[in-house]
Length: 296
Image (spheres, rainbow, N blue to C red):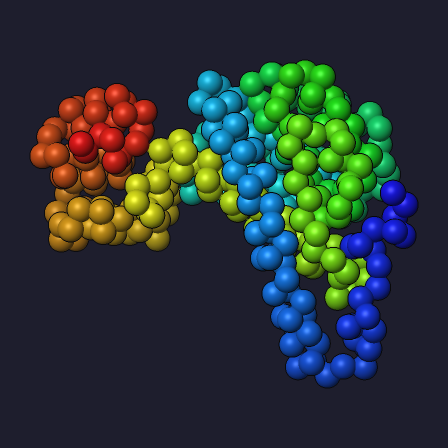
């Protein structure tokens, strides 16, 4: 499909007077347009469900989640990947973000990177892509050569593949086992896919990473119990989670937090089952990290 024919590239008749609007009107208009984004994401929940379920299975046997994209799409993938270690306590290599042009492209456009037919394969080979991995190609247009060739290379390696685009009948959809197309429509500012399309991609990535981590036992109830307490704020949050999960007072929570070597999950299991640190750790290991199973 030609670029000019893409929904994300066409003019929005509701915003043709954008340059003559007051700031208040611009903000109201953007807000109104953004309301359609969550509906576009809602339409692809069934596809996301299947992808996430299969991703959890792959990760459990040693696979990784690889986000790959160019420009805004690539930056969003890198952002989501970077947030996983501090939020869920996972190794930085579990969720990987790759952007066309490398780290420099996070801050500036790298000429020609997204149009390369060979660069993506090199980038994936550099991280030793395997059949256990899940590769999610992200491109608002759905036609970026860098993303298309990434998915083609990944399929050839036996990796599970998915595409995330904001146009229907996207080219990258044909290269992925799990094509996900969020029809976000015409942008407020013509062709500026960092807006509605970018928001939809961010929402979908939030859903993917969070749901996978829940499926890996990184959450108890609605608490991120594997958070890495790397600063004072997060240490306070960790102790507060123990209070919320068990009902003990702050002083007791702090005591168990220290006894558990600052492991929130172990502290919770110690309190709720009245066992030692060693026994709580064994229970969690037997329950594959799921607190709910460990306290039964």
